[in-house]
View (cartoon, rainbow, N blue to C red):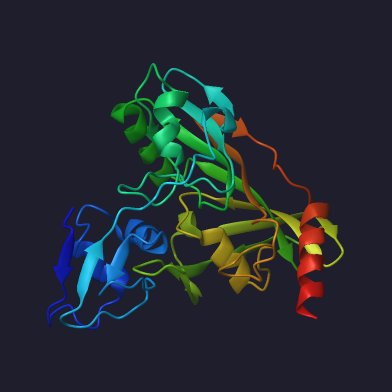
Length: 288
């Protein structure tokens, strides 16, 4: 990791999260954003946001990120299934899936050696930090490659439960294209994505006033797919700070099922529709 670097004319005008590749060449864009949010870089001695446009001559300096006292440990991650080649765990909301070097928050990936001390484990899926539920794991590259092939063949079905604004009375499909490149918020293109593995299939489960509990089925999925697709369809998720109203109480999105030839796992949400309704109601009162 480079301790500091000067912005030259070629980088002038770039977003800070892109320019910091000079400091952290081995970390992806999302990881750099997390480090910036955690205060891991200074621009001429000042903290700046990820969208800040750097200027020629400014000094970008990497600084140590204080790691808070751990909030998550192996006992906080229930084991749902353990086989010879695969396993599945239930990730709690608030825990990152993948580890980020040099700081950026706790992660499920960092807990894998403690969860599976007898076998090197690889993440097969990732959930947003705010999303809870099933994360699949493979023991070895051969098992991981088989799972990826099943995903590509459309043989993996993931079911999420979420609470959305509005009344969902009948099943529907959201097939909009999504642009996830180089941005924190996925952009919906409002034109049909021909690849059905990227579609979101929505079915109503129950209602609580003006809120609906729905099941969303996806195959491979893209970053923020369900959150962006449901918001674009007029049904933002309760508690979504990016695509919805950001109610307190957390994001009401949970991976509740994963079915494929090598895994068949279910995991009930840790919340109720009534709790989502209470969060939405409190948000509406505070906005008055």
